[in-house]
Image 1 (cartoon, rainbow, N blue to C red):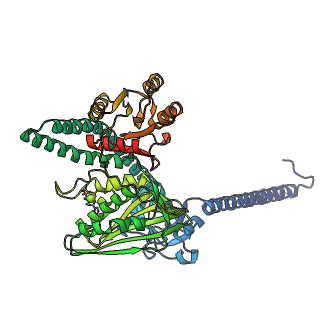
Image 2 (tube, protein in one colour):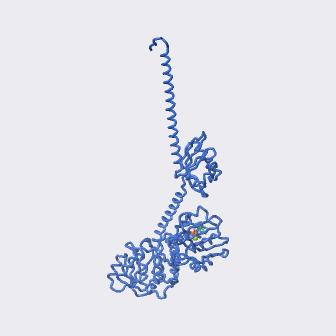
Image 3 (tube, rainbow, N blue to C red):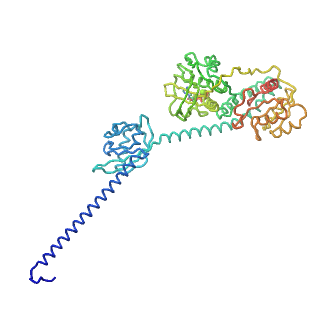
Length: 547
Ligand SMILES: Nc1ncnc2c1ncn2[C@@H]1O[C@H](COP(=O)(O)OP(=O)(O)OP(=O)(O)O)[C@@H](O)[C@H]1O
Ligand SMILES: [Mg+2]
């Protein structure tokens, strides 16, 4: 550094000043930069906060921020308010225990403890009270710090509906599976029973030896019992041939009232509350009688010490779907039949199983557990719903709901099924049956009653025979379902060839509803397997004699 001419220190001073000014400028600049940075980070923070706030607010998951220590709510989102059907004012500042959210308050302690330990938990299942109902939720929590105090962000996922839907699906699948199994067994059994019963009856008629006749009679009786069982299984698997008509439940009930009164012991009072304006339903009257008798028998069994049995009917108009325990009744117009009792009631763990075949709480020999499964099958096949409400010791109510139709009930009384006095005849019967033992048996029976029989193992063979056969064929006696098509289709084809042909279906296994054979017009003749020779002969004669 050079000295000034006069040797003074002024240049140094100036230099010092410049240095000071520069540092001040630098410092100020740095301050300004820092301030700018701070402002920028504030803005960023504010933007972040706003983003979080928005995400919190619009989240489809219910979110809440609460104090870890006591569960006091600091903030909740709209979804939370919606789920709990509360306002912010009702929740903020209150604890979850005060609000009675926890079904088991100890669970709140456990949840908080786990978050304290781990800092974050995911999808813990709980039952909590939400808008007056107990709901299943999956709760997740995250521990954060707010104003130096630990708080928890909780997210609740309501899985009640999902869980219910899964349970319903499982229940439906289970019933479907058991139904298929039961139906399959019943079908094969029916053919076997037809043969056993048929030959037992034939040999009984032929052999007059007293002991032999007695033995054969026992075989025949046992076959009848087995046949009754398979009939129930077929009903459960919805594979019965129904003969639906337009009926009112009230007249069906009145028709069997006397019998019902006989069925129940004297210490049970029977009360009927039948709606006078009850609508019509399209259902098989004898099947509905069977349903009612089963429910009455169960109610009666549940009241060993007496009580009240109530049978009620009413119309029900649903403007929106009505959720029941295991299913939903769609909106629509219905008729309800209710059978309630004041008996022992049903334990909750059994309530979901009572419609399963062979589920019984009755001692061996008293119940087979097929009553309600039959009811279930018949009601389902008729397009209706059946369910039960019950509590232990508080009785049970069974409800059946069938679609209501806008038509008057059929006036005609059911054709009396009286067996005609003359059973035999000399007409020609075309028999179509794929099961060879049943075919042989039926041929034998008809031959005994003097009919001429032309038999075929399939629909195709039957058509060929019908084309070739030169004389008149009076009756087509056919299985409802055959490997190569439905009996109904076969009848239609043969009627083209022979318009005067009468038709009698043998019902065994109408398992293709789309073939239109699960329900038949009530004027069409059919005979359910297994049958006794006299039943067959009677039905054949009756069909032939029909106008
Ligand atoms: N009204 C009722 N009150 C109490 N329990 C009932 C009632 N109805 C049915 N149950 C229960 O449901 C079970 C199944 O009934 P379901 O009618 O299918 O069979 P079951 O009566 O035991 O035998 P089955 O009817 O074949 O003779 C019964 O064993 C009983 O535990
Ligand atoms: Mg029963």
